[in-house]
Length: 84
Image (tube, rainbow, N blue to C red; front, side):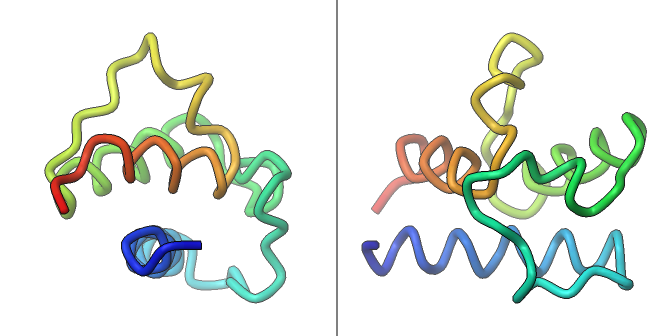
């Protein structure tokens, strides 16, 4: 994993931790659906995506929600769209 991807992963986990403080980031399985692992309803999940947009400046349109299901998917999606 590149340094950029590692930074993105750290930032995403920090966002998740802030919105769901009971979550232990070390227990998240990167290739399993994130929302079910951390037990978020649809509004909480939209808050995660909105906070990613706010913090990292990447808009995730509804048509791309299928690409950001897992932690790995979110990291890959953001890595393609963030400048170096």
